[in-house]
Length: 206
Image (cartoon, rainbow, N blue to C red):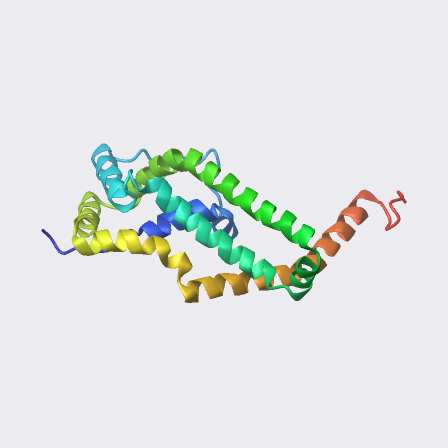
C-alpha cells in the first residue's frame, strides 16, 4: 500500500451539504452556462465514487448529515439567543419562547428533509468534481488512507467537529456579530427600496 495522503474530508463534504453555496458565491465567480465543462474520465469517476463511499459510507450518510446539520443549527440558535434583548423578551414572554422553539425545530426538520432529498445529487456531483480535480493515483492514495483504521476513525469523528467547544463558540460568536448588524442593515434596505420605488417613509409615492 502506498503512503496515504489526506486529500479528502467528510467534514468538508458535510459542511458543503450543510452550508450550501453561500460562502462559495461570495468568494468565487460562478461558471456561466456557456462555459464548457469537461466530462470526467470514466476510470477516475469510478475511483472517485469509491472514495466518496469511503468518506460518506452509504449506510451512515443520512445520520452523518443530520448530525452535522443539528450541530450547526444549535450553534446558530445559541448565537441568536445570546442577544440580550431577544433573550429578555423570550424569558418574559413564554408564549413567544414557545413559538421560537417551534420555529427552530421546524427549520431543523425542514433542513434535514431537504438535505436527505438532495444528498444523492450532491454525492454524484462531488464524485464528478473529485474525478476532475484529482488524478487516478491521487484518488487511489485517498482511498488507501480512508480504508485504514485511522481513516475510518477520522470519518466517524470528523462529523462531530461542529460540536467541539471551540468550533461551537466560533459559530455562536459569528452569529452574534451578524445579528448585531442586522437591524441597521434591514433599515438601510427598506430605505433604499423606498428610494428606488419613489416611496417616502409614510408609504406615499412621491
